[in-house]
Image (cartoon, rainbow, N blue to C red; front, side, top):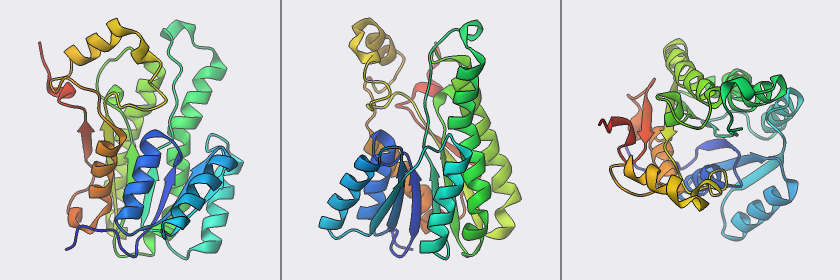
Length: 253
C-alpha cells in the first residue's frame, strides 16, 4: 500500500479556514480530488483558483451546513459531478462559550445544528455515494471537549461527545458496506476559532501547563491524522477516536 490519496474523491466541510483548509491542502498534495464547502463564495473561489494554478483538482461550493436546505444543495451538486465519493470529512464546527444556565434556546440549537446535525445529515446523504466504493472513509472532527470537561461550555462538549459516539455506531453499522468511520479530536489548535483566547496570557499559560508537550498544535498536525484515516494504509482501522492533543488527555495530576 502506498501513502497517498491518488484517484480518491474527497469532500471537506469548512475547507477555507483553520483545520479544514489544512486538510484540503494535505489531501490535494497527496493526490486527491477535493471538493470544499464554506459559507463565503469569495473565499471558496479564492482557494479553488489558487489550487487550480498549482495544477490541483479542486472545486467548491458556498453553503451554510447548519441549514438543512444547504446540505441538500451540496449533496445534489456533488452527485451531479461525481458518481461516487471516497472520503467525507465532517469538519465544520462552532462554539458559544457560556455557563450552561446562560444559553438561550436559539444558541443551544445553533450549536447542535452546526456541529452535530450537519455531521449526521452529511453521513446519511452521502452514504449511497460512499457505498459505491469497496473502500471509503468518513472522518469526523470531534474535540477533546467530547472526552473531558473543558471551559468551552457544556453544549459544545455535548455535540463533540455525540460525534464520537456516532463514529462508533456507524463504524459497526456500515462496516459491511466497506465504509470505515473514524474521528479525530484536537486539543487547542492555532486557528481563527481560538486566536482571541490566546490574547489572554494567563489563560494561554494555563493551557500550556496542562499540555505535556508545552505548545499549541497547528492545523497541519491535525490534517496529517485525518489523511492517515483517509488512506488505504489504515484499512483495518475503524470506530476509533484519535486525540491530537500534545498529551493533554492522558495528563493526570
